[in-house]
Length: 149
Image (cartoon, rainbow, N blue to C red; front, side, top):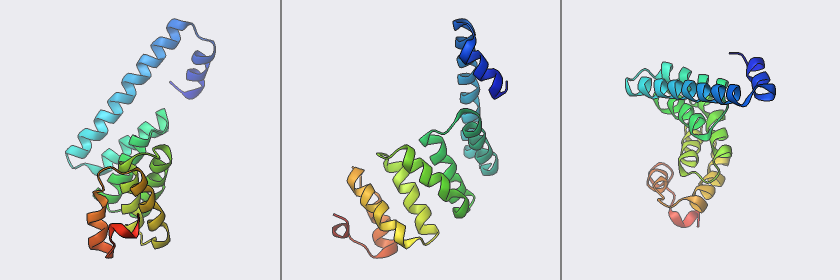
């Protein structure tokens, strides 16, 4: 079903038609996300990336979906340049998420965008409870926790 039909049903369809549409969309969205995770687990990272992109295209952005796509592109497919817009968007959509912040920092590090790393680390410190990121950054950049608090 195309966007125009969906919009028409949501705008002027009966309550039953709208409910049926939303249930159908929810099932389809879940099926796409399940396929993405299954592909990732099987090491089929290109397929996983395509499934996450399909979910975004058809059902809109969620921080989790955009973040997963960013990490697959960065970690599994070794495409940091492709991953950075998704990592940035995940951080925008989930400003209190350590997952999104860590993902963005790793993208910034991979692309050597030094001027952007420190502000993102400061954001992470402000929201983070686990501070797992510090160990990686200490080793990679010679930083200490005191540098950011």
